[in-house]
Amino acid sequence: MDIEAVQINSKFKRNSRTLTLVGAIVLTIGIGLFLSSTAMFAPGMLCFSLGVISLVLGVSKILEPEISLELNQQGLKYHHRRGSIFIEWDNVQRIDIPRGLDGFDSIPLPYIGLKLKRINPVLDIIPGRLATGLLTEQRPLLMSAVTLDEDLIELEAYMNSEFTPLVVNDERYRGVLAMFGHRCEMLSKNMGFHIYIPVDCLDRPADEFVKLLREYLLKVRQLQE
Image (tube, rainbow, N blue to C red; front, side, top):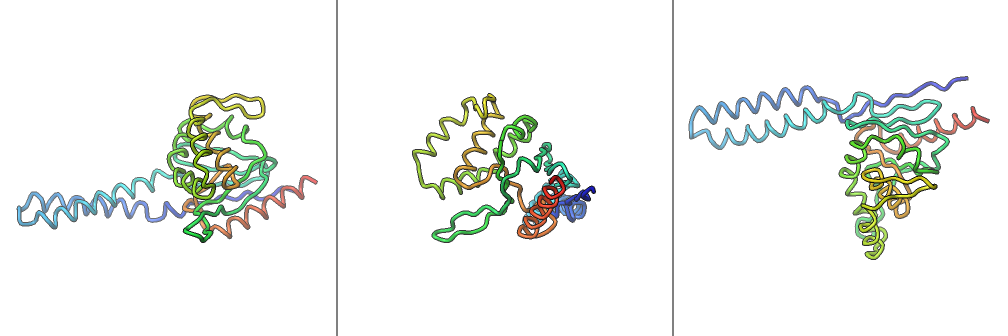
């Protein structure tokens, strides 16, 4: 018996065209106010600024993929504007919401965390552009990991090793793949997960999506028995 595939549409894309259109109109009005009179400089600057912000945000929403995540019997596919990665269910060890520190309080972070049994299958297929993008986007996670660990010596060791080749399970990686692998291993050690999916690409609250993933994974494993 086959398990029905599930597609997740990112809520981040909602109202993308409307926001882009409004931004373009407000930007045009701002330019018109600039050209009409020096007395309209302040309103023109305000409209121009708001228009640019709305236009940039709207275009960034449009560039995001229509489908952010796909679940099927083989695994989970995460779509990013820079590329996609596929994670087989057999390689998933744990699914949960990672937590960080806010003062002395533990708080949920805006990600879905996946702990893998082996990082090699991801490093073997991830596009370089996607690895580079995730390294940049996930800098806040690095700071959270440092806050949790509070070991500056270990952070210094990680920073020194970030640009060195990575050897995992007798496989050697260089360049951006090695950097991404080092980051995944560091985050796994300090926060418990290798892969982090941002919640703004989901269509439901994080806890409901974690429940969906766990139930789907359970069905797959039951089918394989």
